[in-house]
Image (cartoon, rainbow, N blue to C red):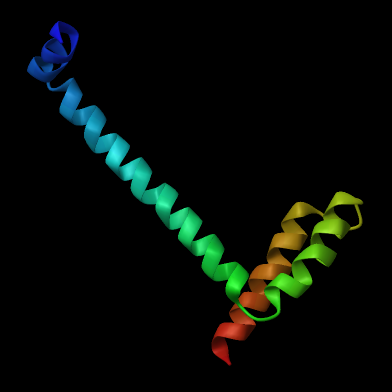
Amino acid sequence: LAHRQSLRNAGEFDAKRKKQAIEWMWALLDTGIKEKFLSVPGIRERLPEITAQVENGEITATHGAEQLLFYLDKRLKI
């Protein structure tokens, strides 16, 4: 308790809590965006193929991500 009080007095406790709140918000956004991404028709079907291509060195991780993001963009414009 004494340690926590000294952190509060120095303003560090509140600063740390604010930083943790922002980090938690981004973690929730990351999770939510990934879930929505995977719910787009066609993405789930393409994901295993592209994942295998990246794993086998047939395409780079960058190219795999670009393909999936392109497909996402294409689906959202329809």
